[in-house]
Amino acid sequence: MTTEQLLSRIALALGIGLLIGLERGWKSRDAAAGSRAAGIRTFALSGLLGGVVASLASATGSPAGAGLVLGFGFTVFAAVIAVFEREANRDSDSFSATTVIAAMLTFMLGGYAVLGDTRVAAAAAVAATGILAARQDIHALVARITWPELRSVLVLLAMTFIILPIVPDTTIGPFGGVNPRQVWLIAIVLAGVSFLGYAAVKLFGAERGVLLAGLAGGLVSSTAVTVSSAKRAAAGEGAPHLLAASVAAASAVSFARVAIVVGVINAPLLLFVGPALAAATLVAAGFALVSIYRQGDSKEGKAMEFENPFSFWPVVGFAIFLAAVMVLGRAIGEAFGSGGALVGAIGIGLADVDAVTISMAKLAPDPLSAAGAGTAILAAVASNTAAKLAIGAGVGGGRFAAEVAVLTLTCWLVAGAALWGTLALGPG
Image (cartoon, rainbow, N blue to C red; front, side):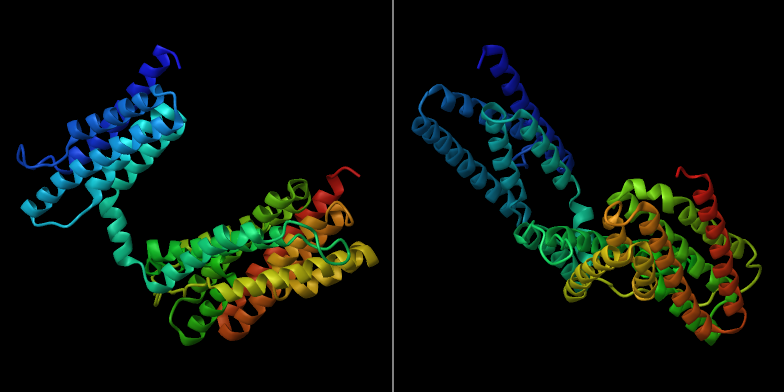
């Protein structure tokens, strides 16, 4: 290491100390002089000290000697900081180890800036400063979060960082089989999207109106939005056209979600299904907006609430079901071609459009053509929409049923026209 390189690394160590010390100094800026155990100057010197100790360790030329120098320097530094912070805690009648840990981290990052990757050292310093600065926000979040929400987060993290690494990354099963790792990863993504939808309702509040609840509910479950709106319409808890607007908003999000999933898994297939899905999305969104603007003096009624939709066993069941659907879809596709896949998609789409979307997107262009897989996806969307809206209209009845019927027929007609245009204008 040249002198210039060493000086730049020492400067980075000093900068790390200044960055973390700036946050610590700002936090205790109102404290009287001499009442703080560690402020901006102490942290700046701590980072610089870590860099100097690391330079001395590197100069020994021996791994054992370097380890002894670093270990001794860190031990002495940590002991001194701990003693002074203990006295500061006693004087202020507080109980916190944050400053001690932050100082130890500053020392170590200063040392790593000299001996390791400067980019990692700088990034770690920024992350540490951000965590320290977000103290109030983090504490407020912990105070507001419920046990089911925390449990869902832990389950999602376990699925991602514990289970996913050990899931086999090989194809198994008949008819080309499925890759368990890919299936599990897709299940994680869908579960994460569902939880984000729930978090949106939690953050913004369902009381802000049926439109917001419909938009958020479209991420969680558009079927749940339809059933809930139908029950409210039947009970007279809200204006039928506003409740139908909630269904339209959820449907628009659901259509857009299908397009996003197709684009992520099989981008070329989006050229076939994209126009029809975009048309249906625009129609549903327009229906919702028009219904909101013509609400007049009608009463919205009670706001909708969503339960936490994410738990471990439903995700496991969905992953297993998804694998079975993928194998079945591949078998039908290989045996009967596009026609068989279309029939299967319509039937399965009545229960779950995501499984059909994912499996068909992965089957194109082999063994299914883009047109065959795309038509199957659109058929599944149509059958799923028909099932959800038929249930909602049957439960809600009256004007709500009429509004939902208009929404459904308009989406079908416009999407069908867009599909016809795609087939007519597309190559081949």
